[in-house]
Image (cartoon, rainbow, N blue to C red):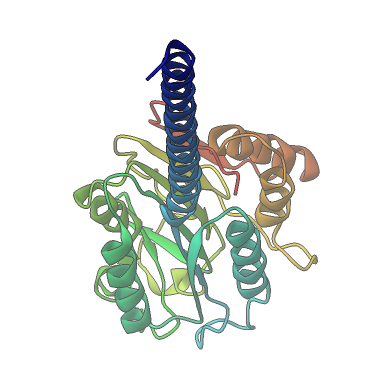
Length: 279
């Protein structure tokens, strides 16, 4: 082999080594790009899953009772209220179970369903529209099949609001929201030897927010609108971007103004932080 051939051979080897290096770099860059794409896809998937989980972790039981055999006439607003609030809450990402003209068994089954959905990161909500009665400083939601002739019958046939709150607490709900539109003059009062108008103060457990249609011991008359005054103003305030505490307080002020101070809702809170209502 002469000197020229040796130079060509060495040059060929050098070029081959350089090409091999470039190929290796290209393969490495392609692999890194693929890994980055996979990481990005995983991040997007995680973000989407988190968003879905947030929606699934808001549950509500909505009860509207209007047809009570002992009442002089049906209540039209509670069922309208239940339907309107259900639609609004669903747009906010709540899993809503709505029950109309519920018997005691209907209410008991609905509470069991609510209990089964609650987990430690759940925001749980209860709405009741209809007749409410207080006995012994405790407030009861009245089902449509209640047979009430004396105060003891309220405990037997009614459903305690505080017991529903206890159920939410027992399941470890992150936050508990309650709206009770039941401060009506009920049709059973004339049967009691002693009675109190309206609802009793509702005990507020930890991390709870409670809105009632009137201050304890007061009654509120139904208006002539499609919805009750309370639910009308609540729906208006749920449309804002504010949290639950802000929405409930704005509702209290709006109802008071709309009724010229004749109806003043009560808000009780033990929340450690506000609850976002956005969908």
